[in-house]
Structure formats: C-alpha cells, structure tokens
Length: 227
Length: 347
Image (tube, rainbow over all chains, first blue to last red):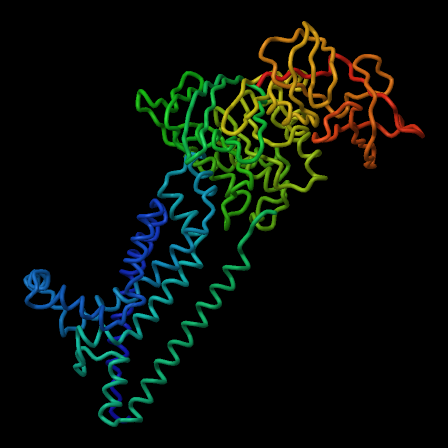
C-alpha cells in the first residue's frame, strides 16, 4: 500500500463523468421521443434501448468491438480522425455509455410518463413556447426522477467491468479502472490491494444508493394531486 | 364573440361529431363522462386535432381541414381551465400568474398586472404559496387568474368544480358566475352536473356518445329536451317508449296508459319522459291508479317508487319525488301529471 497509485480511481471517475454527460442528454432525448410514440413502435424501441441492461456486459463489449474494431469501417474512420477507442481509455466511455444508458433512459421515461400532460397543455394554451415548457415545467416536475436516473447511470458507469475489460483491457496507468484493478490484483495474489479497491467501490456504491433513496423519498412527498 | 365549430374525429370505436355555434355569455355542454365533452374543448384549444371540419373564432380560422389550417395552441388565444387546474409545481401563485403575462416585456408592468389580477381574485395574501399548499378553491382562482391575465378571446372551463368538495361547490359556483359576469368574451363550460349547468349557463348543448346536439336556451332545454339523452342528462328519471294516438295524446305501452299533452305530438315520436317531480296526487289530468311499492326518505323530500295498475310486469318502477309537507298518512291511490309536463322525445 506504500506506493498507492490512485490512477484507477481517477480513470474510473473521468470515464463515468464523461459517459454520464452523454447518457444524460441521450437518455432524456430518447425518453422524451419514445414516450410520444405509438404503442407498437414504443414497445420495439423500448426493447432495443433496454437490451444492454439485461445482456451480459461481455456481449455488449463484443458488439462494441465489432463496431469499433481496428479493422472495422467505423473503427478505421474514427482512427483516421485520431480517435482510438480500442485498448485506450476513451473506449471505456463508449462501454460505460452503452451499459448505463438504459438506466437513465428508463428512469427518465418513467418520470415523463407520469408527467401530467395537462401541465404542458396549460402552458401551450397560455402561449408559452414548447421549449420553455420542456425545461421549466416538464424537466422541473420530473427533476427528481431524472436526477435519480443520472445518479444510477453514473454509479453503473463507475462499476462497469465486462464491456470495459473487453474493449480497453487492463493496462496499469493507462486503461486500468477500479473494477478491472480489483480483478487484476486478486489474480496476482495482491489481496490487500484488491481489498482496498473493493472498499473504495463499496463506499462509492453506498453513497450513490443513499442519494437515490433520498431523491426518491423527496419525489414521493412532493407529489401533489388535488382530490 | 362568435365561435363556429363543425368537427369530426374518430378515436377507435368512438366517433366525435360536434357542430354548434356560440356567442358571448355562458354556454354549457352537458354530457356523461366519456361522451366527448373534454375532447371537443381540446379540439378547440388545439391540443387535439380533429379529422375533418373547421373551427372559426371571431372570423379567425383556428382549424380548417380543407384549407389545411391548424393553428398551434399558442396562436389560438383560447383559455383552458383544466379539471385539476394544472398549476405549475414549484412555482408560487404569483409566478404561476406571471406565466400568463409572458408577452408583457416590461417587468414592472408585468408585476403590476399580476398584482391587479390577484387583488381582483382576492388571492394576494397567498401570492407566495406553492400549488401543493393551496385549497381547491384557491387553486381554481390561481389557474383562472393565470388565464385571465393572458386575455384570451374565449374561455373554456373543463368540469371546473369536480375537483372541489360538494359543500364548497355551490359557493364557488356563485362566485365564479359573478366574477365572470363582466367578462365580455364567450365562456364554454363542460359539466356532467345538470344543477351546475342550470345555475351557471345561459345556453346548453347536450353531448351524447360523441354526438353534440343543438345548443338551446337552458330553460327551453329543461322544458323541452326533445331527445332521450337530453331528458336523461337534465335529470328526467322516467322515460318510456310511446306512440302517437292523437293530436295531443300518446300511448305508453310499458305503463299501459294514455297521456294528454300540451304540445302537438309530431310524427316520429319515440318516447315520453316524466320528471319525478311532475306527479301529483291532486292532479285531474292524466290521473291513473297506482301502487306504491317502496318509499325512501331524503332530508327534505320523499321518493316513492310506484307501478301503474296496468303496468307490464317486467318494466322498471316509476319514480315520484315530493316535498315532505305533501306527505299524507295513506299513500295516494292515484297520481296525475299536468299535460305540460309530459316531455315528448323524438330521438
């Protein structure tokens, strides 16, 4: 423990932070659009968008490799632009986005679906623009649900292992994340090192779940319906 | 103010067909729940899009399927008071009302107008409360204020009292009627409550399973409903099939009686309606022997259910309501109906 290298924590945090920003907007956009779709289209899109949540992360990693692999069209195109994803830390962002997106999408969709449409309509008949209504009324009314979604997605991104290890592997000081480090240290019989990172993981997860619970409780108590 | 509506919309098996016009003053649309009343309002507001037809307000075309005109709700200048008031959560009463003043650029002017509206509605003292802290009546006033500051060309009220406690309704109805008395534009109110419709409105239209029937003066609507749906919705308890037997006489097979009428019976008569209050023991016209089969006491009235002597056995009993002071020791042997109270129903 004397040469404590905190790189995995830093790497995990930057991957999770970047993926959360992407997932926040993508999740809200998808949730908003899907909530308005006709039922059949909604059902199909819902399955596709939620699939990464139930698939083994290694399968997601496999698909990501198919997409971004160095001999695949998209992978070659990105490499021409100077973006290297495979075996490189930004690849971790793509893995985290895919795996954590369903969490954001589903919580945001749940929040949007319980949103009282009368509120949006009332705004429209008052002459308020749809953009104003979206940000000031819809997002404000659903903010606890959306916040809970992004916290969950952040936590999931932080703990991502399967897809990440397939896409970016484990290179100390370059691609190592908290979760890949735990496995690597355990494999090399560094029990105390593994234990340290397990504790870091536990602490982060506990804080996140606490935050989600607090948010959900507040959400329930401020819900107002006239009887 | 003049509103011309002629629209059609198909929603699965439900077919909405509304053609009516209305002027300034209170127009009520009376209908059972699920009859398409709110959908009609939503079409006028631009929240829902009709399949065919046109909506014209003061010469302004809001919707015309042939000319492909469909103004967004923002451009229609139509106020919509929702059943649960739809106040924006997280905003105070004042902020909610200010939302209706987004067109006013000057902040001071905006605040002055909001204050004036709150004074008029007597909600200035709750200006800093949020929706969850408001009573039903306060929420209604706030929502109304938010609409009125926006100065719409037409005001629509969707079941405005259904979210309120019964004992509050009467008071708030009177207050709202007074408050909106000076409002020069047209007001359309949707309700399923005939008492509320009668109290609030000048004219009434009937909505029955998606079909809007002609708008009439409210007194005329109650005196001559003309259709079964209108008779039912205006509270007529006894409706039975009937056929014309004379210029001013009909026969009711289910009750096996002939009834004299005041109005001339037209061809195509389908049924007659008799309000529960119309039966009288001392009435000489249309008097027939009856048997009271059940009596129920209400706070200020009695309800008697009876059968005519010749009534078919598989038909429902007839309802009779009368004030307590008319109650006698023995139930009456005969009940009569003034010919003017026999409602002739053609549909």
